[in-house]
Length: 464
Image (cartoon, rainbow, N blue to C red):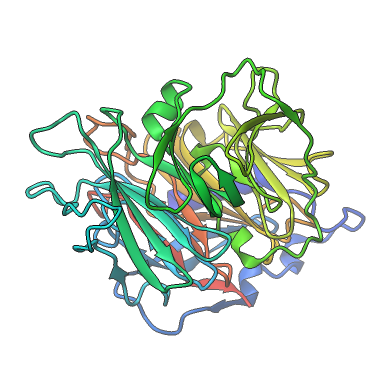
């Protein structure tokens, strides 16, 4: 298997390799030191489960093994997925299952927040877990730009009342240094895995005021029809909202999207929602949905939580703004991806294309994230290989501001398992998920034959 992966890696590196330097000088590959010549192990303490994954230097076509710590579903996942995130203090956050779990030391020690009985104030205090149905919940989590951590957990198996899903809001208040929770009733009979994002404030709306608002949408409703979701101005009490019609008609608005040089705080490198939220917050306030209307314009939820139409064309509905003020958008067509990047507020774009056609018959799942502080872009792709099994890959683009082509490709796991997302399938990997730690280490979900449920890995070998 290792020989097979190495063969694929060598072929893939030829497809993806960009120019080395400015192209004015030709340098023989054997004269270029591979990137891992500068690697150090970031964590000297050993982990209980460490594995070697094949990494290819795409500029020299050489390969080596890099070390990753590996964790199974008992560290916050469930049968089919992990929902991973990081915060500015270097915590790994996971709510693939019922409750948030977190580690501040790259996975050596883990803690979890399980809601207990609180004083019966404005929030209902039912015990979240349904007896006999433990381990079947799933949620979402993200750090807001004031340091709070907003999260939710969905319990789809409430027992006798099958028409009532359970939605529990979970909030870490940075100023208080503690977690709280609230049970929310919702109207949809089938909610599904949530996607969650911050609406940057200060918020002044009919629902109340706050530093931010939290938007939660259902994967099921969001993708199958133009439905709404739940919104909160305190991270605990949620209310239904609707998306605007795709044909437009909302008030037009003009926004300055150029935040390059704005000295944004570190939160902007970690507050990226999952790509399927199809939205990203703005430092000036509000929340933007690129390529939302049928005419290609963006939808904008302002700080009053009202909808507006922005006459700006994005190259994709999947976009992210990092701390450097760089806009990253990624589009997928067939077995190729194009990473678009703008440093002038979506006025102009540069791009780089990843063509996996020689190795992939189709794309299963994918995710991406930029980090402006580290000048790092990461693309995670799980594809169906031409040989049959699914293969998990991570591309690192270090120094994206100078060169958008990836410098390394890592095959995460064995690449020997064929899985499919969706209920009813025997082997499931429902969505990709990743985060970037402040030191540049990647935390990423994957699945291979070593475990019946999806795993996630934490990168241990990094450039000095």
